[in-house]
Amino acid sequence: MSARHFLSLMDCTPAELVGLIRRGIELKDLRNRGVLFEPLKNRVLGMIFEKASTRTRLSFEAGMIQLGGQAIFLSPRDTQLGRGEPVADSAIVMSRMLDAVMIRTFAHSTLTEFAAHSRVPVINGLSDDLHPCQLLADMQTYLEHRGNIAGKTVVWVGDGNNMCNSYIEAALQFDFQLRVACPQGYEPNAALLAQAGERVQIFRDPREAVAGAHLVSTDVWASMGQEEESAERMKLFKPYQVNRALLDSAAEDVLFLHCLPAHRGEEISVDLLDDPRSVAWDQAENRLHAQKALLEFLVEPAYHHA
Ligand code: CP
Ligand code: NVA
Image (tube, rainbow, N blue to C red; front, side, top):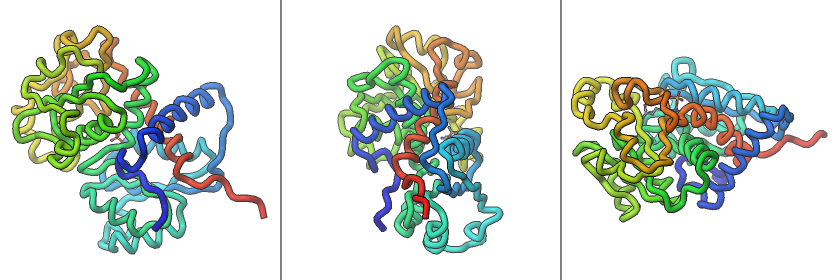
């Protein structure tokens, strides 16, 4: 199928990615100035959520409405997909009715299989492996507050999870150095690490990793689907909490990002989101603007009148 998909940051060129985040900033400005901009009138986004979401659902749904289109929320509880209809069949049928499909799922292969049978763009709204939409917002947020991230040092603290994997792809695409501070056995995807080579370094000591860093980010210690491992992870990850003292060893102008939801007292100290170095609320808002840029980029513009 010929549709352009966004399953990973590697589906775009570095220039396209920079273009998307710059466009996100423009669309944010248009909205702040109250300018109506509806290039996606009559276009419909289907949103399949196999996992919970606040930000991803709201930002895609509000984003489509603001661009003049509509979004339909699909839960596996209510669709035949949830009763075992094959992913490929669902993709064929849904993509004949919709203009784009966003999927939040467990196995990344659900996304690649859906995309292989879809006539329309498929967007990864988070899988067990990757969360590329979040990285668009993160990169937009860094650009807004500090300018170009190329050549900077970014530190991922905690679990080598889907977010961490997407930070590795971001390091390659946006040209920054990434340090990952994680316990043994919780490293990010091995193939991605191999692909990244010297661009990514693994640390065991978060303090050593954060020294001189320009951006620090973390995420929950137990991701969706890992609830049963939660107690064990809480013990193991304890030395990896990001707090004000840890940020004090970073660069003077360090920023802190958290994709949210946050668990205060676990991966971050109770006060960290109130620290002036945290821009997590701007980051959450930027999901809306960055994804509107993505939708504009992927979805065909409005129909012509007959
Ligand atoms: N950061 C993020 O994706 O949040 P939600 O799980 O609320 O969508
Ligand atoms: N790593 C987290 C991110 C949530 C937005 C999860 O997958 O649950």
